[in-house]
Length: 112
Image (cartoon, rainbow, N blue to C red; front, side, top):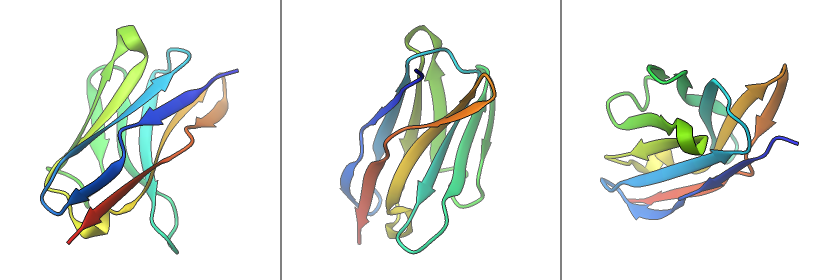
């Protein structure tokens, strides 16, 4: 059973920073971060393929950084210059042996 366990969410003021972590029970080549705000669809925020290739949504580009520690099977999302519109539940996602796996979600709340 593949498990993804997230941590690091919380309440922060606008302009602040948070780092999310997602620890996987297996090594997964491509890991993503999604988020879902109340009343909105889940949206893709950042993707990391292997150890070097990254992609970001336009809404977070330049403010968020995805990275990974392969030795720990952990992917991170460093979020800076946070805005109230970044408030959402953040989920990590990985695809392993043709199946999709999701973390439990971690709440990020940015106050103005």
